[in-house]
Image 1 (cartoon, rainbow, N blue to C red):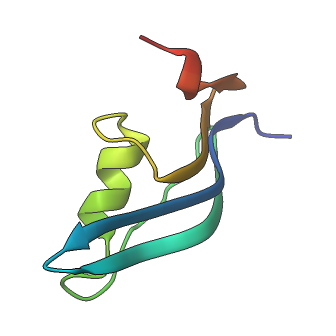
Image 2 (image 1 turned 45 degrees about the vertical axis):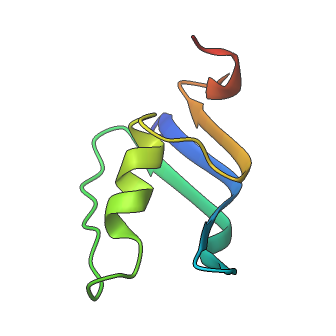
Length: 77
């Protein structure tokens, strides 16, 4: 069985833009296993880059957890 390297647990990403709240995704649950090949595809503006920024820890989710090697990233400096 493959080891889970990265996991998202009910993450949500939203932001304020000109008097309205925009939600890119909510309750997103993903698991990436060791040795697995993953492609992230979608139309422009669908949140691909935002998701990559989150899992690279360059940005924080509005809600939920990102777990790398069974460690919650909320506690990382």
